Image (tube, rainbow, N blue to C red):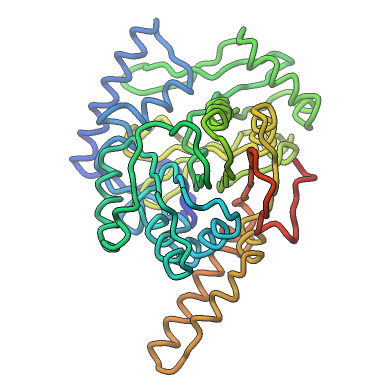
Length: 400
């Protein structure tokens, strides 16, 4: 996940966690220390990030702390404006195969609620709205949110694994960025993988020259395809887990459209020589900073998405890449401004205030300095040849 409006901060400028959060973090630190000791003194950064975010009961996404909204660590698009979910509902309806929807990682359930309400108004409700959610705590939050639409709740079904032979629309909003990444370093023509050790009570980095065939092959490929071969020192990350997840998803689909929404770049921009410290970022109480080795278990850790890698993974899994656009152009193509205008009544002062509020929300979703350019939308298809709305103008697949 990410903060759409986080303030940059150095580690020393961060708010102090309360006593409960400190105690929680210490419990996870102890578990990670044991994990490192059992592994011989070091683990890969990918393994560290996996435990920090997803260790049962202790990882950031497995515990009961507030994550979303003003009281959490970041704000996602569905929480910024109901128009975001309404736009996705328009996309789902346009495919003609929306009789089943699968949302992977539904956060607080706000997007599911908004999509169902919008589809209800258009008489285009799915027979089943599946939510794949592994966190028991988040499932409960989603149930609470969706209980606000009791007439539609019976259409929602929670899953703990991908369904077989799924036919419909799959939506993943800010899912891939939280998947653990492999971090690599180029130094004097050698390729190193970042490790994490525990030394004198704190986590530290260590680099080992890698012998992993997949990592070696990918970095050599990146050196040929991008400008990173022009610099002697370079640090970045690769999200192999996201690629493997997408291939696994494809194996569970019969006829489907997959919509991936996340912040990221095409490969040439992601692995640019000037982006020599990678894209990894952490979020704690709406402060963004680059240190994942502190606040373990009580802060979010994310990395941008290499959308070229996702496209390659989709093609390897016999899927088609049917569209790629910035979030701004995707939402505008779906008629976001028309949706805003339809709410423009201005019959009272309260109506005017509400319209101005909605206008501000649209700016946050679409302006380049906000989420509009950094967030991208990719549409994939398997055994589907129908319409693909949202990419009529400014489709940038040629940049992948």
